[in-house]
Image 1 (tube, rainbow, N blue to C red):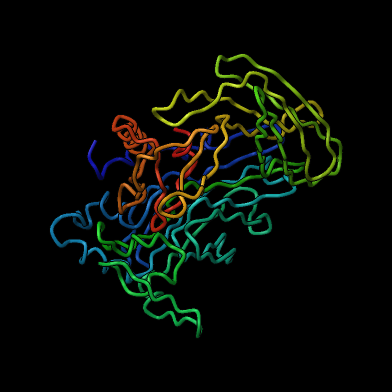
Image 2 (tube, rainbow, N blue to C red):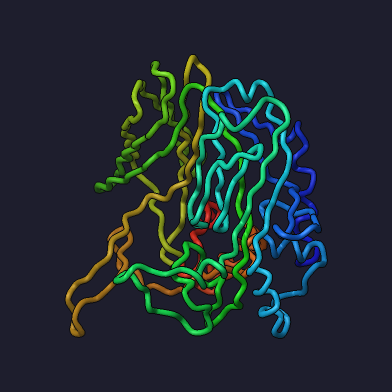
Length: 395
């Protein structure tokens, strides 16, 4: 498979029988797959895979050259002085539309985007690092619908941005485009001492509709309290409740050997706390200091004996603190895991590619496996890139 043909195996993912995902009490409708893209003032329309970007679409259609070759980055950079739009049609089934709440969940819009549903402006976004959850039922209709997302030029934005007095940011790394620090976008996209200037844009992560009428899980916070020979888990669950009625929370705890224990509690509010005691816990250790056993916690929201929502987590049981004890040079800075000081060996994690749709789970897995083989026990997520998704932390 070629570098610029990685999208091909994903085409066809938007056939109706495949992208209407039913979870008891909640429906999801994926918008991943093939969209249409064009430069806003242009007439040429090309297919564009989502998740994807302007650059990945242009490369897949043979309309630009490899930005890594010689000084092509400067030609490619000029493409992003223009605005681009992605659009597609989709069908909202009657069963989906009849839910009380429908939201559009955008897990990665890069960056200055205007979202239109059926020619009505739903929202404007300005941050590629966050998820946007937008209530949108009033913009939809049962049956055929149309979506368009317009991406405005990040270069035009930074060149015209005027910071308020006293809020100027003066630091710039070598090899970067001036004033990139004023936009909530991966700063290395504007160049770095190790990377090219390629301020790409697009729908770089999943996008979907979510519909429900009763309740759903919004967050599960797991806090570990360690004692000698045992761990108490404090599980704080947050819910979004549309219908006030009794709900049941079920907790399934799966040990590294596959053995399971189940617990449950009732709730009628928007939050609940529950405690699970783990006897003889198998502790997680950094690479080179021991094993990395993982436990799994499944949290289910039950209504009328049916599962409304489910969240699953894999966790390692360990304590992690920082020691700043005084030493002959001043104060040390040492990670302490399970009471043992760790000699940290590792590096920064920077984006593997300037074209973010090409940062796949497989590439991340290969990189992390290489780090393990090189005896790393620590990775620092570098601040000039992006926030890695769950795939990064679950590997």
